[in-house]
Length: 367
Image 1 (cartoon, rainbow, N blue to C red):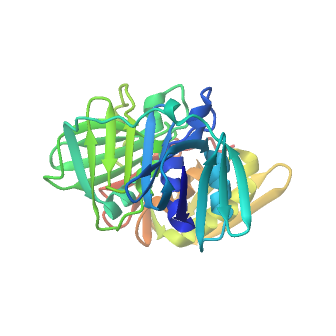
Image 2: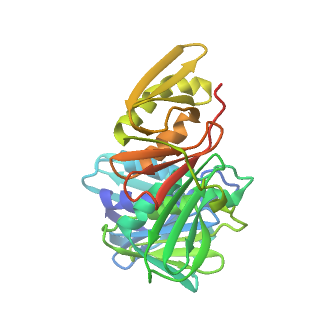
């Protein structure tokens, strides 16, 4: 096998395939990328045993064939090369040579026949959304996905479509992010949980913002195919929590503030809060909220932000990282916090379109 390919195109295709690769695996081949020659180019495929991601790019094929090389090493080398010029990839015996200008790298080749093929799914259900809309929806909720593998169903995002409204939910039980798209006719009625890893690859697919992305589902898998790239992933199984029960049905206090200003204030408070379980205290005093954090070893810090307050004289503590991630994911200039008491969860919403995008955050002990 010998091919020559643009560094920039190779880097883009590799980013997609590497998203499905596994670094920690008992099967060495799953830590690799399979590169296969196809008509007019090459196809790169990554797999961790539960997810496959492939991408093609144009290449000059001097000698056809297939190879597997370690994903992490290949990614580090390709991304470190200049984005101008071409990269030559050549198999010689059991070694793969990668050349770019005066640079030459030699890597161990693995048997491509051991690499698992990307499966086909019957696509009995589907959803169709423009790429920018789907990407925005993913970014609005994905920060709240759990990393607790003892509850696998929480390590993904719930997609629930009833024919009129697509609801996406993520939670780690300490906070919960919800985003709704109200639209008829975008697909079949579904209720599935998509792994976070698959959503990150789908979010970063290199297609135009107005491209319609079709998400196809069967009983166990999801598939997205753009023509140049394809993602197939196992869905997460298990009973997703009744998330609607967690959303407060009423509130008695509100703070409305500038989102950017609030992010800056909490970010500074986090300098000390990191030493105290990320605990940040918010105290409403009339038309301002005082934001404080302390570290037993380093000291205390105080910030103030102007707010429009409604019965907002309340003292409450939150994990500052959770607050920052929620604020960063919300759209618009203004945000509103809806609360009742210091021991009950708060809801953070944008001031516009507030019914369809929000985050529920559990409070912390004052400490």
